[in-house]
Length: 191
Image 1 (cartoon, helix red, strand yellow):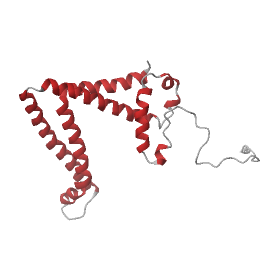
Image 2 (cartoon, one colour):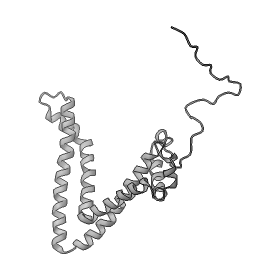
Image 3 (cartoon, rainbow, N blue to C red):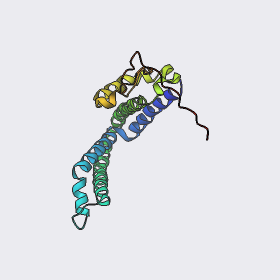
Image 4 (cartoon, rainbow, N blue to C red):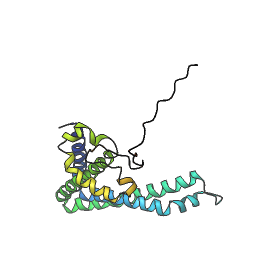
């Protein structure tokens, strides 16, 4: 196994261990907190930035502050609610089940992140490297990356190469005509 395999496996294992330590409720609360914080920042960040400006003219600092304040505020509030729910689950005696389900959710989260990494690697020349071609782990995550690629806009998806095929043509360039002459070298001038 090569370095690519070890990195992808490490992503899944570390995520699984965090899931095991935090439990299902903790991982789920964290996921909900991040999603809600992002949603709140996008929907209310501009309004909060406007409230931060004293004169009604919103500048870049107030705008950034509004988005950051919304994001961090929701993240903290939902994180506290998640902490309370985790304590409740522990007091009821479901911590063993909670941790096992957290492990499963952690593996799923790690696999998702690994698929994203494979998708991003498809934007580079990495899939044409011999180590990528010999990988035993990459083929496990390629179907997930292909599914993600299907959700990308067409102009972005066409640049993702997950198979490692060397492109033969540049789609943005017109094909050369059969009677075209090669470019001549530039003349060398002596100064």
